[in-house]
Image (cartoon, rainbow, N blue to C red; front, side, top):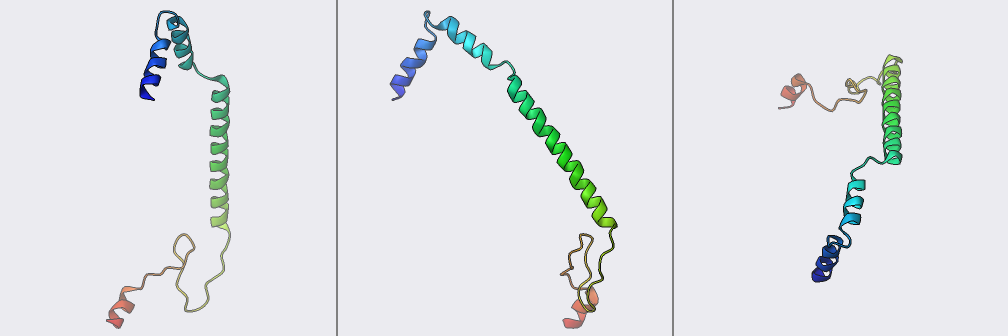
Length: 94
């Protein structure tokens, strides 16, 4: 299989095909306008979603939250109850 592949590749660079091969290879390095438009649209969507997400996070931090029930762990800065034990409780259990 490798020998057949090598033979085919060699034909691409023989005198009969060299000009066409060089033309095709040089065209491969030119920018693809459709690809550039897709990339720009994706980048714009990422920026929009990021801005929307930041706006949502900012508005959710300003809304008052309910107090946790008595005796439950205090929430951390992300609103998740902390699972760490206080140092005084840890010493008392030792």
